[in-house]
Amino acid sequence: MAHLALGALRSVGIPARYVSGYLHPTRGAEPGQTVTGESHAWVEWWTGQWTGFDPTNRAPAGEHHVVLARGREYQDVAPLRGIYAGTSTDALDVQVHITQEA
Image 1 (cartoon, helix red, strand yellow):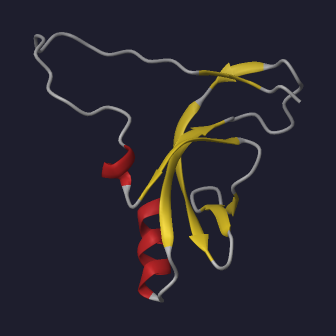
Image 2 (cartoon, one colour):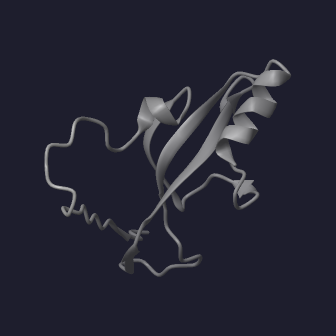
């Protein structure tokens, strides 16, 4: 959805960028509540200031969006990139925990 939004914005001449990060999945989380974060992407566009929007959830990007990187598209901000030299049976398991602080 983020790439579709990027294309739509750019097609009408609005500068836009891809944002990669995590989404805190629990709305109304209590301070100190820790949950498993969900990898997510949204867009920001420039109209005198950067405005974030999450097209997947059809909502403004806000306090539940944790920014990791910004770029022109996904390839600019891919969380993993490189050469793999292990066996085909190796696996990668990553978990991210997010805590609502305030």
